[in-house]
Length: 363
Ligand SMILES: Cc1ncc(COP(=O)(O)O)c(C=O)c1O
Image 1 (cartoon, rainbow, N blue to C red):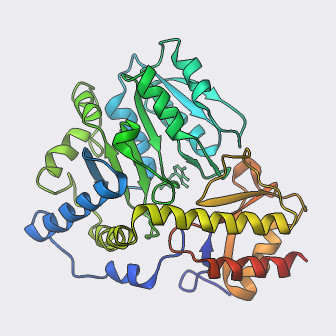
Image 2 (cartoon, rainbow, N blue to C red; image 1 turned 180 degrees about the vertical axis):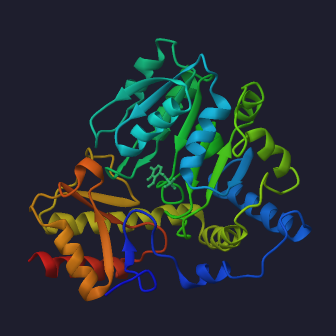
């Protein structure tokens, strides 16, 4: 029997398995968050994140999950009379629109079928109406295993709509997929750390553009906990507005060092290799890919359950025999799809073992 003290190894699309040495970072002696030792830690993490996200603008460290930054982006940077164009192609991009509505903002729901990708042409057509000063996008749709072509979309937007603000949820894409924040011309990009950073959940990071910060100063009722103005003010001292989860920041410091030592190009390539391996396994074993061809994610693979396996029963068998789990389909895609996460510190050997055990259960 597994319990919370002896949990299964995680191959769900977050939280993912955490290396013991990363966990150990979280047990370091605590720091005073207004003392110089903390500022040193914070400053070093922010500098490393700038390199990882390819930005010279603002980095915020947020003691929240990523959902907090969904809300922060809207509350800080959208006026009440502006309409946000929310590009919806799966559960999480759908939720981004729900958050904007919950914050009392006007939303244009731009819905396409789950598993389909947004192209630059599709977004161009909407923006040509001139009605939308803000666009929300999800880079990597965790619910469908799809990566939107954000480089093409951003290139088009920079050329044709340079004044439109772009908020991108990069929660399950960051670190696993290329991301050059400044070159892409984005305004807010954010992620929680339990995905490809492979750190325990409960913390998020954001890159925010100078113009988004400037705009936030003009938006009333930004709220308290996620006020960008307070983040900027305290970041100038390498601090956060409120007491942060310092153990998470210690783990992030360790992880950022690991990533930069490996080199981001290599990290992205490694994720691509893991994805290719999993896709190849699916092909050999009679499972089609769920997302639109050409837009498959490199951090997780969503398979159509073409063989009609009992996903929950397979997972139960894996858990009982090997103490390991993979992801069922998300929401309405439960049992119709299943998802294998290959982000963070997962190796080909880990995947070989997992997929071999899945084969034993289904054959
Ligand atoms: C794409 C995406 N966006 C947002 C979230 C919400 O993140 P959090 O649970 O860290 O708030 C998730 C969680 O899985 C996600 O996959």
